[in-house]
Length: 154
Image (cartoon, rainbow, N blue to C red):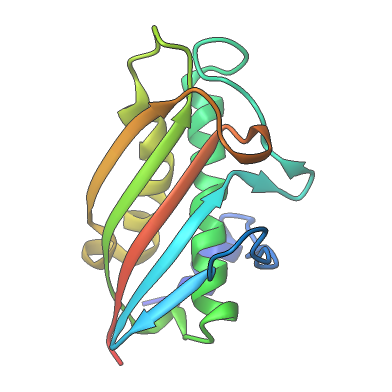
């Protein structure tokens, strides 16, 4: 079986440089074997992925934004926490915030951009509990923000 970073390369994806904290919080807090990863906004090689679902973005674009936020989570596991991605025992839970109009009702489909990536890369270990809901705005105008609880093997 291929390792996670090889699977990312096959998808044509490179882990981004982890973003530094921009307020009074830690990007990753480790308690035992559990990593609590602060909200990661949608950002790609071109910068922050901005938009409002139901207005300036459609579901497919929102899913791409959620995928970008998920890659930032993996980046923090690998580089900020200094953990090997192969040691991920479980993506326990995601909370997905979607910048959306009040009429938008497909937050769960946008969140699938992150969920599907984790399952693709980690198989059963990528399956997780999740909450997805709308917000009137997110930091820096980001379309999506995701935080995570991740259990490591050691």
